[in-house]
Length: 260
Image (cartoon, rainbow, N blue to C red; front, side):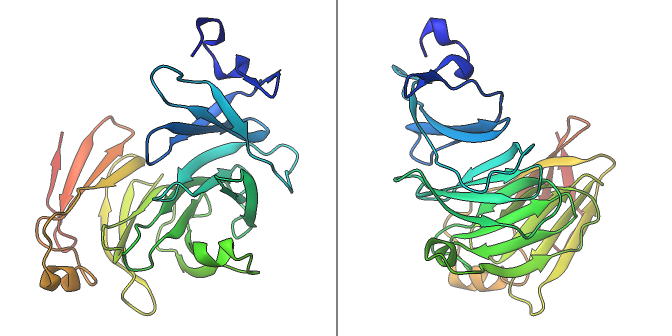
């Protein structure tokens, strides 16, 4: 980024300064660019290349922009072809990153959306979008239906949490979805059960702001099948809470954890 444009607000897009207070960003899976958004929504793409970092690459076009809306969350799907943006009004906008056009808007939540996550390709419910809201629920949407402009993409609702949903992520095989919330609860849901239900709950003394699954390598077919109902042995989840602690949970059927 040019030394004269140390802030994205000063970066020129089509000859005019971006002029947006940026509150959230997401890096493209290939690492060559990143998206940013904030006040009055206005998502845009910037270069992440070392020799051109922060240079503007373009804005996303938007429809249905509500007065007073701002961005709270951003997420790319795994190939970077779709960008999702959650807002303080509960709407989720989806964009085609090649054309930078709006694909669709999800109106399933009335309260802020702080958590967005796309499940991995090749997994159970591949490339589905999980949307976590302050209403205590996490909705799941079929991205392929959104691409084809279907009237609805809703698949199911995860609703065992009671606080704001602060993060939500599916396991590598997509069989288990973990959510964290403002009431300090880590919830695990099995997508293999019908109806979908919580299979484990871990409670901490403060809000859990983020979570991550340990990548699994060399998982056998037998282990993979088992993980549709509970985590395979050795599968770890790391969570970060408001107390500044990192905790590791191992195996959904146990309460063992490790603080760091």
